[in-house]
Amino acid sequence: MFIKNLWVDSGGQVDRLLDALRGHLDQYDLLPELIYVVSAGEANVLQDSRIVEFIADLEDGGHNIRFVGSACTSFHAAVLSFSKCTEAEALILNLELGKERQQECLDSLGIGVGPDQDGLDVLVGAAATWICREYCETHLCQISSCDILSQAPSLSGAPDLVKSIKQVISTNSSDDTRVVSFDIRSKWAKGLLKGFSYSDKASWLPSIEEDGWHYLSIKPLSELISYYIEEKVTDLWLLTLGGGGRVGCLKIDIPSPNFQGFLSRLVNVEKLVLEDAYIDFSSAQHLGDTLGQDYLSHIREALRYPKRIYRGRHNQIFDWVLGAGSWRTLLEYQGARHG
Image (cartoon, rainbow, N blue to C red; front, side):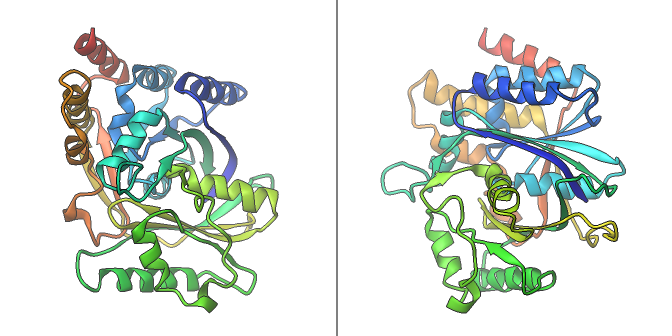
């Protein structure tokens, strides 16, 4: 699998980022029919009608929209989903938009910026990644491997996860390989890092999130730009932590005509109804916005990825499917609900 091109923009309001993304997409005469939309905040990002309208416009243009995710490893979820389909190419859109909606997901888990929390402060952004199967010397890079590892809910869960990370890295590494740290401002991250010796981490490159800014699912893409494109480090393992005990492992290399594609792996797909997820988040928002009640526990309940039943399942992804109608129908429903 290859990345044909990549675009990332961070910071600012929803309108600015959507306009920038539209401007990027408009430069292409023809985009892939298959478009993955991902967001670490799951359907909470869809509470903003401007975002739903943007997606509906893409669908109206003839694109097949897939809304998938797996917390901050949602880019990995789209890559894994694409690895199991037959399309030759796809576009992955990371919509980490709306500071309040994204931040409240972290705060609901106790790792955000609330009192006595870990201090992860969302940096909103958008990204567009064009992926394909066929080699071309002009492609940006090669995705040689992709996995979402998961920590089991047991006493040995953390050390077993560290062991799995080491094993995955070792299977596709050379003396030139550099690993980008998963370090973020969280107690869980610090605990996992203790499982790696000084020699293990001696040549690791710094995480882009060490200062507390949290890029959500855009972290590996921003690091790809920083290290692969700007610093010319062309043999990379990008490690990304995701909520619910996940670690995304993404191997990036220079495109090779001899690459046969990364090895097939089991992908656990949970099919969910998008409208149900939307209503769950909308109901939680109603408690806070209209009734003035503490609603964060309801946001946590609406989130799928933290649920205990998924702990220990490697390559677990979520695929939200419209139960009926289209994205335009969802937009109309949203207007009727809030009109």
